[in-house]
Image (cartoon, rainbow, N blue to C red):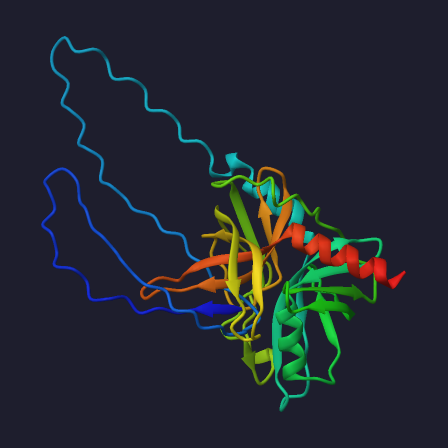
Amino acid sequence: MYSWSATPPPAPAPIAPSPRRPSGAFVTSLLLAGVLVGGVTGVSGMSLLAPRPAATPTAGASPALPTPVPQALTGDGTVDAVAAVLPAVVTVVNQGGMTRGSSTGSGVIIDKARRLIATNSHVIEQLRSVAPSSAIEVILSDGTRLAATVLGNDPKSDVALLQAAGPLPAEAALGDSAQVPLGASVVAIGSPGVAGLTTSLTDLPVLENSVSAGIVGGKGRQVPRTDVRGVVLRDLIQTDAAINPGSSGGPLIWVAKRQVIGLNTLVVRSEGQAGLGFAVSSNTVRSFATELLDKAR
């Protein structure tokens, strides 16, 4: 993961709230600082307003209207979208000896027949930096572990393509990220841990296949890779879905279509907030995978 951090300027003098509506302001500035940790974080915010007390009925008043029954929380299709894609989500690991350490990331199966898994390039870079001679493995949603070969990775787009050594249970459809509208409901899935690196996997509480929800807050974003000089990641999707260390390479899902529209990649942080997440677009993933496979023929 890459993360940005920022320190806010001194807060302005408080303004007394009006009797009818609270108000407030928060201003912060962002400072770029790239950090690879094999995952990303995000945040969504919410404000609540207390309801007005109900008026006391008077004689001759019309009877109160029945209170509408709230729509079920699953009515927007989130549960169905997660169920459709979750079997195709994997945890990417590189476990060496106790003295060499371990690292984790996430990935998503995009071609079951050819056993292809997409993830972030920086996940592979991180794994190799921790244990250069150790083989990469993927952990399937049912706990099965398979060896995986890196077919290729591109630091300029932050996309990597793996091939599993054994059969895979499912695949997720890559959607057209250019078609997803602003405000569309999305879900991020990944395997966050308490830290990006530990002395062994037993020291890293990895929460496989964790799910968080949000919306598309922006498209076509550009962010420099501060760890790779001169590289700017392009066509990123901005989201407020909460993403955490270890989730890099996991899918960002367009709920309405049940399709993958990106790979969770980086976070922008500001003081007092968890941050905004960004994902490499599915169109970038498709372009890289197609070009790589064409060259291999």
